[in-house]
Length: 210
View 1: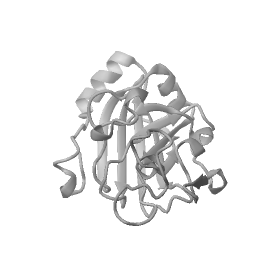
View 2: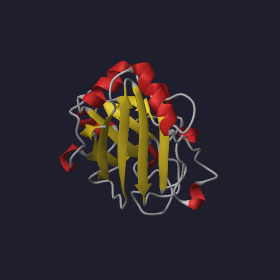
View 3: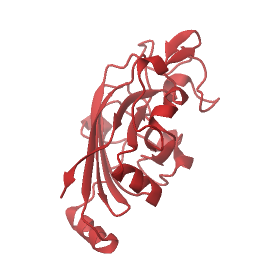
View 4: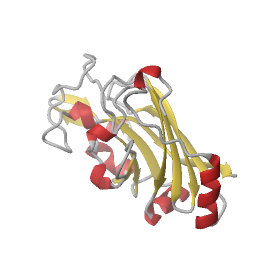
């Protein structure tokens, strides 16, 4: 679902009803656990936005909620990263891109690790959809909810607090669009780096069992 009215025609709703959660619990076994994080601006990327995220995990099924406010109106890829340090990058991880100090996705890879789950609005959620730009939120203020079947490794990464939510897409030069001010993306030669650079980041921490 989208909180902002302007986003309603763009992002599909994937709200999970409590009844379906109970059915999932019955099939997967175990009590659900909740993990959450604040999504803070990635250093050096000139992001004036904020957000939050939570994951309710039952077995390998996750009910994911991501709330973002203040990014530009453009596609924003989102992922659960894992198998890194379970942290967000710091300013000294940034390097120069097109002569400008900024953070690319690969600059922060050692901190948050590679993509484990793509938080797409529909269809595949594997790392293969990491750059499926048309299937991510297309606006800068939104609420995303979706029920996703994680791989067992990713579910365990969340449980062990080694999972990080990253929202991509920045406006480094403040012109309200993605361009090549930072050069070509380190992830795809067909995209500018602004489109794939990390904007918001937060490590998922356990907040209690329900």
